[in-house]
Image (tube, rainbow, N blue to C red; front, side, top):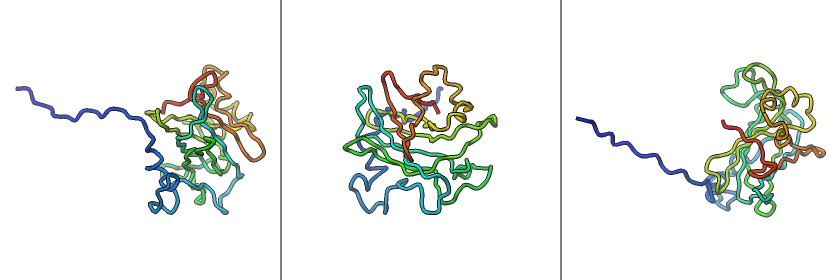
Length: 204
């Protein structure tokens, strides 16, 4: 006799919000007392090593309109190219730099602002050095699965030319969608979800 397999069916995929801010950034949402400050609110302190920079980002839809209900997380190496992770076997990362941050979009401008440091170079899986970069993860209402992309630095042209990930992008005209443009101590990086300037997203 055939055995009955009473397995639960997979839940239907759902959009991330509008509740994503309540769960991930309660203070931003006006729900105080859960944490003294929202997790991932700060990346640097007065002891953090490295060049201080500001990253300004917007997530734009197909009409170039900024999303005002999105949430972005970033993670990166420290100034020496080491990750603050138990999996980091190449050395000890800066204890004053967590390497991870989270920010909700400004409700008026749709902008995300991260005060961080410029990361060092990290080896690719085959040992070649990647250019300095910051990894982004984006969620918002209407995005069922978080989107992954990277921001490289406009003033790292030589390193960018050697980067093994950038080299794998077949359509070279799309490489600029991954480059943050430097203005003083700030880098501006717009993430386009659709359209002619759609950002390169990674399937990871």
